[in-house]
Image (cartoon, rainbow, N blue to C red; front, side, top):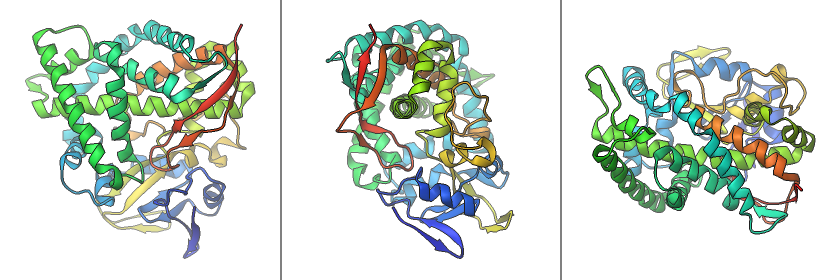
Length: 400
C-alpha cells in the first residue's frame, strides 16, 4: 500500500493490489482531511461529507466511467455496463426504476423467507466435516446462488451456473479488471443466453414470480424494451449473487473478531436484521460509491472541476468517530444509516432481497457454528472496489 502527502492532502494509489481501503493509514488520513487524492480521482473519507455528496445536484452516478478508467471503452462488457440502471440519470433512470420496482415486492420477498431458512439449514447440514468448512464454497456461494434461483423460479440444481458466471463477472469490479476482461466477456455471453431462455419461458408460461413480473413490467403504455429486459435481468442475477456471497463472508470475518456479538446473535435471532446493518456499516463489500462532477463547483475548501471522479468510501464513513464514536461493533445499537447499498436516487434496487436473505442466514449460522475461527488458507479479493473472500476456511464447535 502507498500513501503520501500532496499539497498537505493525503494521496493513495488505489490501483495497487496491496492497497487496503480499510487500513490504519486511511483512518489516520480521515483525521487530517475530509478527502484524499487518488489515481482515480478524489476519495471522500468522512460520514457527513459522504452523506451530502451522495445527493449533491452537481454530481451524477460515476460508476459509468469505471470501464474507461481501466481502458475498456468498447465491446460487449462496456455496452452492458452502460445499460445499468445504476448508470442512468434523470428521467431515464426514473423510468427504469418505476418499471422494475414492482418485481421487488416486499410481499413476494417475504413469502420466500421460510425457504431461505430451510436452505441455510440444509447447507450447514451438508458440510463435509462436522467442525470445519470452507465457508465460501460450502455456504456463501451456494446460498447466494440458490436464493437467486429461488427468486427466478428455476431449479436450484442450476445454482452452479449462476455462481460461476456471476463470480467471473464480479472480477470487473476489482482493480484487476482489465487483465480478466476476456473471461469476463465470455461469462457475460453465457449469462445473456441464460436470461434469454428465462424470458422466453415466462412468455410461454407466466407464473407468479419475479421474472414474470419483470417481463410484464409496465406503467401506463410504457414497457421495458427487449434489450432493457435482458440487460436488467442479467444485472439482477449478477448483483444479487455477488453482493450476498461477498457480504456473508465479510460478516463471518467481522463476527469472528467479535465473538460476544456472535453469541448474542445466537441467543437473539430477532437481531438478524440489525446484524446485517452493523456488518455493512463496518465491513461492506461495496468499499466505495462513485460519483462524477457534471460541472465545476466548490465544496467546502475544494474546487471540483467537471468530469472529476469522486469515490465515497463507505467503510471510512461508516466508522467515522465523529458520528459513531470509538470503534465498536454492537448489533443492538441504534445507528445512522450506512452506505453499503449506496444512497440517494441510486440506492440499491435489490436491497430488500439482500437484507432479507442475510438476516435469515446469519442467526442460523450463529446458533449452529459456535466459537468460529479462521483457519489457514484464507484468500481475499483486493481491499478496494468490491471485495470479499475467495476462500474462507473456518473451524467451529458444532452445536449439540
